[in-house]
Image (cartoon, rainbow, N blue to C red; front, side, top):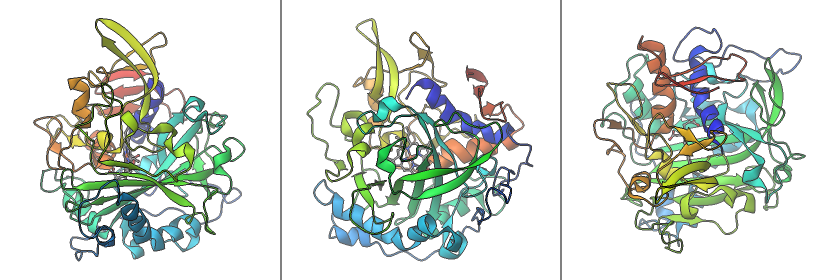
Length: 460
Ligand code: HEC
């Protein structure tokens, strides 16, 4: 992904603040643009935000699946299967039977403050503005694509949303205690893409969801929103589990759609790509590429496209996640430019989730970068200026910290939660602080966005 594309990702946070002239309310369902009945007549997204203040301690069948021991590369497959089974009954309905989906009734919840970014039909917003064809050459992606995402917190996890946002979501409580998730908390995230099966054959037979959108890298986008089909590609399931994964307290797993998998329905054909429970800080994958990873498991049976965009040294990341980027760095006084460098992973990126309460920002960038706001270099200015891969500075992004320990002193760690630290807190801060918004974008049509980051213009 080039820096421009990363910026598009940042820019969509910004979108919330200025785009449509909808009133700024924390619990808006959508951006105010409702598809005309000539284009769509099904159910619309309802934000689920009656966060519970208490919930019983949940059953944790994923622990039983590994005999209540530690997760390892040997048993991670059984663990990932148990996570898929645990959410399956509900997620089948969400994905395959939308008319019967009722999140509140089933005990799944959304974060506040993102309404201005959500399209009306499924409540999705842009995950990655553009993933280009160079990332998925081997699997035959013929046009760039945009990804759209939707996140749900289960009852156990939503107790944290209640502690942070209370009932009004106007004065979030950001402390080390309030942001921690209880054991057994599950958070899921679905990713759909704008590339259809004619553009990327790996999507044959996948679930289509119509979305009412303007940003579409596959077609070039639309001046005014249009109902277009997007296709189900990736489904993340993460769980707070300090018993199985004591070093970080979390297990990250993701499923990818496999058209050749057995099973009758699309949900059946979602195959674990892998699991991660730490960043393998002992393995310097640049200086010693063969150093084994012991806190990452990649499923050898997953479809090959899933592994085209793994993170540093093969650490887990999914096709939606942007763990490969064009970077510029200096070694021995010489600048090097590398396209599609593996520079992140699920838990590397999420371990940057923190909030500097005083200044209303995340202090370090989410990818290894020499500054925040990050700078760019290279002939087209599209390379993110990064510490040298494998250097001490780079390794700050690949440590194992618990969710109570911030990456930078003086900030509050948000227990790996990126929607909170990277999306909803910035949106809340921008809407309510009266100060210059942390992130601001200026083109309601979603094209040629000017992105501001901490007051500095980054990209047009
Ligand atoms: C380069 C950064 C990056 C990588 C890599 C990444 N994520 Fe995320 N993730 C984010 C951001 C930013 C958000 C919040 C914005 C959004 O909703 O898309 C997020 C949100 C999520 C959420 C919603 C809950 C939360 O913590 O905010 C889940 C679940 C999730 N990611 C799982 C994963 C999994 C599993 C992987 C690896 C397979 C992964 N992520 C890789 C950046 C990343």
